[in-house]
Image (cartoon, rainbow, N blue to C red; front, side, top):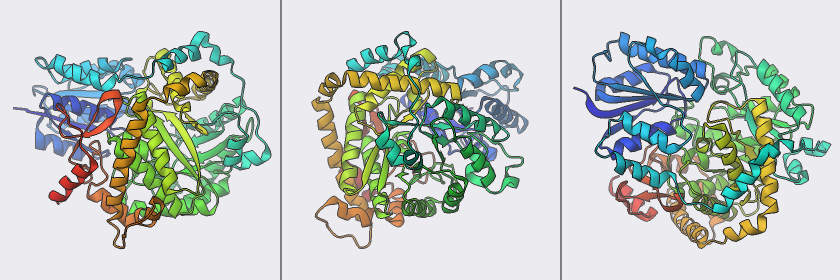
Length: 610
């Protein structure tokens, strides 16, 4: 007899766990227990949990290259069957979620699998996905109640003017006539901050890296982007193997390569950089690695990368916390600090991209604003003068306009208090999960999100291409999305007086005030973990207490900083978060009958159960 339980895991170390978390919430509504596994390539770990819990429902996902997703799913199903873990006669339901192209490919193969697998269809409407999940869990009597709960979450009230302006952005595909970006001066080519100052619009950056056997396709794609003059900075989407084994090409052999461009050596990096020396000479930066960060920075400099660019390094992530790297949180914190110091010594602008990682794991808004404060303290402590703050809108996708603006304004305000002497640059972007697989709808969403982002007066916009709910962006997609975003910027500026009136709404100011107050309380609790803590007269004096790897590791281990979507049980906080009115993500006592809790109440609960 199978238990009323849902065991879910991504395949082959895919770090994209948000969909599994969303499914587990619906399971919770129906009193189905859930076990979410951390990303891993170890099939035995998944099998052990299936043996232990004997679940009625099993969820699998893979949101990277479709061919690999098909192969990994087939491998998993054959393994379950050949090991006798699941028999054809067992009362068990297996569901798989992937990119639309993966689902299309699987439809031609699925009948040959030894076990039945349900495929999650790519729906343009988030409520349709919720209905499919409800059907998967065989929910009947509670169906309408659960659907109404989901509807309350995913359809927050927003700013109606933005809908009208998004229509204008994509009207008659006029955006395709946007002119190329100008060619920057020699000084701007060598300096990221100078390029920002020279640009008449926010500078544009984009991830780009083609999963392949070698770097060739990415080299040609960089050439195409540079000659089209559509981006100012290319962020190399590094393959998972490059992030782990760069400099050791022999370790690539026989391992799954996915997620981006598989550069192996300094020569590969040099070729990738040289491809950008044309058109508007976009700067090129790599994705952060999970080991040997400081030596890799020097290798990049020698190859030409980071010239006129900035670099992003996480604070808490890319380790055992999210399964993307082998290190403990404590050890990776020390390495991340060292990487930030090295970049600061070289005068390279630094972005610590933690807030969006917390958003991916359903952290409540106070954790997001606290993250902005902490990365400000760390960068200030490490001597960074030019700080880049990424503000990812529509993440999670249930977040509303008012909630986003209040959260980001609170984060920016706290950053100014922790690092008052630094040069601060706002970088905004669209959350990929908010984009529809219907490409025409996604164009509208990207235009609308850009207008929302412009309310934060960004100096940098990260291009998320409208195709990314379906597949990783190719040069043609980035070119088209760049034009759409630039058209949205012009529409925003033409309507800015009316838009600014919308931002005077007290919903935004009152929420911002609440988040700042809650964050200041939480920051003091973190600072008090320092053995030499003493009261201070202004927040910038907290920097030595907050910017300490051991203090931050303690805060994670004690769950003072945590989120319910963390899949490593060691670090997962025992609390509930929920999107509520206007898409604000709150800490609550109970999901179905929620009462908003303060940070003081949460910390007191933690201390009581230590």
